Image (cartoon, rainbow, N blue to C red; front, top):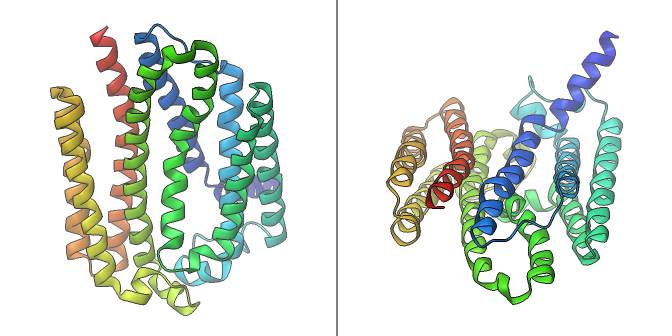
Length: 320
């Protein structure tokens, strides 16, 4: 019984359940707080049923879980250097079991996603799950060892999580509402792509900061990360530039699209100031612990970005 409990604990750490929870919450919030109220303002309704939407979320979560499992499988040697006390594969989970869980979760995600695509009559959308699963495999085996490519892939896949919900809704909206959906489509794209862009930028910063944290192990095993190839100082300044871009884009988004005082306060307190805190850690960072703190703050910023979806919902309801 004790061994079973330890094994389950190992599985949960292998698939990084807090990250999977964030994936699920992201898609739930984008559907409930952004897409649904915007459609209702145009006297329309989301077309995915609660069951189909739940299946789509589960498919996304399963694909992500499979990606985490295969990533840890191929990273077990590097993890012995970078995080020997917290490694999973080889300590809590046998490598062959990690590979098995990758296969189980990935196939489950592909089956669920294909089923949703088939039920809604948009079977071509099933290709997304095959492509993402394959991309996660090649990321773990090849791409993450290439300069910048791995960082960009992870950031793009993270940005794709909220956009996937809209990708499944739009064909159904067009089929059921025809050209009437065209005006609201623009607003849906602006809002969802806005969140996706923010997720992309923050996760790109996180990936670079994580590479700085993992410098020793990455260098020992020949990974071509920015800190290894161009140096830690260059990596930190690239991160700072992306932070500046993120802050500027937040200001522009408020000025040109939102102009709401609640949003202004939320952006300032929950996003801009924390990004400035991360900048301070990066500028003053001299050891792994400092960069780890920056990574934690970036996670908080990501959660704050999710929280803004709730704020948007309140703003939209107030306008009705």
